[in-house]
Amino acid sequence: MIAQEIGITGGEEDGVNNEDVDNNSLYTQPEDIYEIYKTLKPISPYFSIAAGFGNVHGVYKPGNVKLHPELLQKHQKYVKDQEKLSEEKPVFLVFHGGSGSSKKEFTDAISYGVVKVNLDTDLQWAYLTGIRDYMLKKKDYVMTQVGNPDGADKPNKKYYDPRVWVREGEKTMTARVKEALEDFNTANQI
Image 1: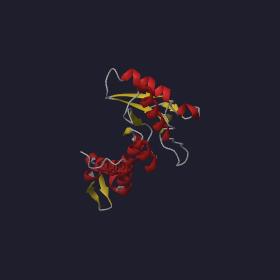
Image 2: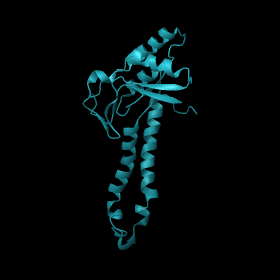
Image 3: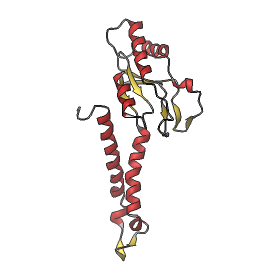
Image 4: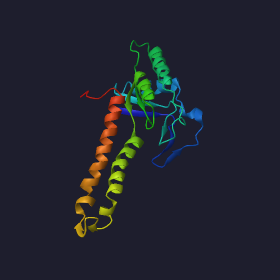
């Protein structure tokens, strides 16, 4: 599937900093969506468009990001009207910068045709949480190879073995993915 990001996603990701961008630039216009739709449709029916509706990369205090998923409905209607289509949601949309969004923001965006949600920051945090909590809990067992609260000659390999602490990150990330699938009404779909 071809994916096309339109406009600017605020925040900072992968060394690109859009934290100071003009707020109006975070909202894609229907005409822009239609131009991409017209360009990609002859190539393949399988493409998605990441339209800006106030999205930001990274993590922010709740309330600092002003999402307007209802704009996506206007984009769908514009493409439908321009192409004289019968389907209500002709465009496959992507929700960039979904981390930290509310369940309502997700469900609203999905109801307007979002078929993919990006949660990279939330998933990074979930992964770290499992590893961080394990390391803090086992701190006295991961400071040296030998010697811990159970004895000066006790080995610590079973505590610092990456297969142990990486697994803890996998568990917490798995729980976050499960929560997201439930929020997106996609749990148990496959």
